[in-house]
Amino acid sequence: MSRLIVVSNRVNPPADTGVGTTGGLAMALSAALREDKGLWFGWSGNTVEEYTGHISMQVVGGVTVALLDLEAQDENEYYNGYANRTLWPLFHYRTDLVNYERSFDEGYERVNIRFAETLLPLIGPDDIIWVQDYHLIPLGRELRRRGVKNRIGFFLHIPWPARRVLSTLPRHNELVESLFSYDLIGFQTGEDTEAFLDYAQHDANAEVCEDGVVKAFGNRSRVKAFPIGIDAADFATTLKSDKAEDYRKLMVKSQDGRKMILGVDRLDYSKGLEERFSAYETLLDKYPDLHGELFLLQIATRSRDSVDAYQDLRARLDTISGQINGAYATVDWVPLRYVNRPYRRDELAGIYRAAHIGLVTPLRDGMNLVAKEFVAAQDAANPGVLILSEFAGAAETMKEALIVNPLSREDVAEAIRQGLNMPLKQRKARWEALMENVETNDVSRWRDSFVEMLKTPIAELAEAG
Ligand code: ADQ
Image (cartoon, rainbow, N blue to C red; front, side, top):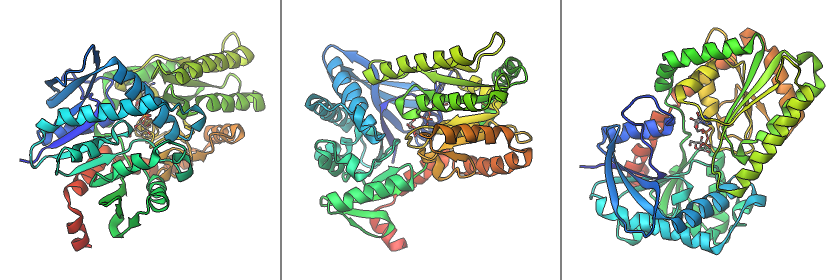
């Protein structure tokens, strides 16, 4: 029987104990794996003295997971190194933050080989394999080298960079060549797909055929955008929970009649938090009549603390937030509430619902699920306004948001003012269109369309066409 095997760096199905902090992606993949009696394979997050290849099998939330431990050197070179110091900044256009060392490259390759060798005995003849994200780009190639003939797909959750940006990476051609071991390569947006095809045609002599079939490096792969969404039905249930309602009430009480602008992000330089704070400062500077009438709640949970760029960012944000409050706060008003602790999904749902403006201004983002969660949480009778960066993948489809350039503090400040003054009729019209999109293009659709296409051989596609 054919099973779905999902492979990702970390494995995090929701526990049996109900609502946790797990995101929509984990929920959707878990649902697929439960239905198909599939398997989720990845790193346990633990390190051991010496790598043994031992797999620990567990059932979590009805999903079978297979976990492998890595060595500390693997964590440093593969995870903190090549994945988070090289590929993450590069793919988010931060070439200034890219740190490339040959040892990172070697660690990345070594761990991908470890994943392939450990996964190999678990693969049945009819299984289909779905590899997730930038940590595991060469995994398909390593499986093929070991004789795996199964259908293997890959989905990139982060942006695919423009050709000239990618070409700053040593051995970029080899990285792209390894992608052509997959039957299906999925991106978040049409723009990412085009950027990939641009590279493939110009730097890899690829031939782009009908139906997104691309021939390069002696292989044929199908390349397509699959925009990810949230689990809208599950989010609606979460929103109705007592906890969500408690948090909504808590926020309304603490607003004390003031308008709340909300940002929710991992503390990451791609999310544009410094620029967002500057834009807010511009708003306060330009419009003194708003003082005491609004506040910005920025929830930014600490992330990748062992990488220097994240420590530096945290220090700068501490300084800027202190400066804004120092300059504008009064004895009875704090303009910026800056919070670093994480919140549960049900708590977050209540906080979103109480917000008047959702401020989502990444400098680059594969999709951005926070924008979709904010929309899903709004009250249909009195919805808040979404302000969205043109550089988030979500902007490709969420056109009814107020779209801004996050690098322009004036643009963002004016969008906030426009959002604060937007008449109810316009807010409703924009929100209804956005909500329809969030509900239709949800995570189940993302998963089903990817898996369906992965199951269909390229020859059949050509015949159907
Ligand atoms: P992320 O960069 O993590 O994901 P995003 O999609 O916005 O970005 O958020 C992921 C989830 O984390 C959301 O469900 C959100 O609720 C939760 N979250 C964020 N900040 C939180 C906080 N402070 N407290 C609690 N929960 C928080 C990567 C890519 C994205 C892409 C996703 C999915 O970078 O572009 O949308 O994968 O493909």
